[in-house]
Image (tube, rainbow, N blue to C red; front, side, top):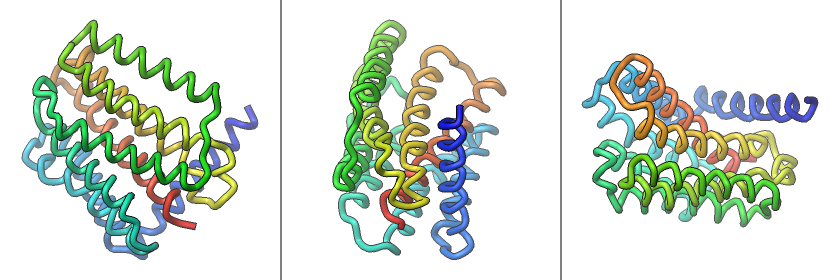
Length: 233
């Protein structure tokens, strides 16, 4: 129980540190703004506003990361994530290859930078995430076969990022680094919730829109914690 409380406090500290940058950096404030608008657009079904706001999120986050120096790998990953966001505006049945590759590039960049920081996954952590990934593939195959390819690709890279970010040695580096595991896990949860939304929780009622808004918010916080943990001291 103490370990859970400690980890929760560390995640809260990392999030507060990330939020505090909004008072100093216009691009960080813009990121919060478009993320907020994107979440509300999901809640109220404002498709046009969502189509404009969602793809703007990661570019603003990338702008903030430039303050700590040019990192081509991270910028390429965030560009891939933007392509993934654009693809999510389309019907899932289209299984856009560009979108899957974009999400894969995004997480591959995160994973590369985590390994570069010395991250190593534990056997137990990697095993649990692999089991979750395989379960997701099986679930997609039984519910909607058109989603199998996205789950295979997006699930694998998201699970890898989560396993690497869970390395406890990373948390000792800085307050922002304490949010790495939380950020990666939030992105993994976001991908899982998206799968459920497209297979089980189908519809356009209030509850479904609340879930959509939650997915957007979860992903926004996840990206924020990961990028700050990788770039800030």
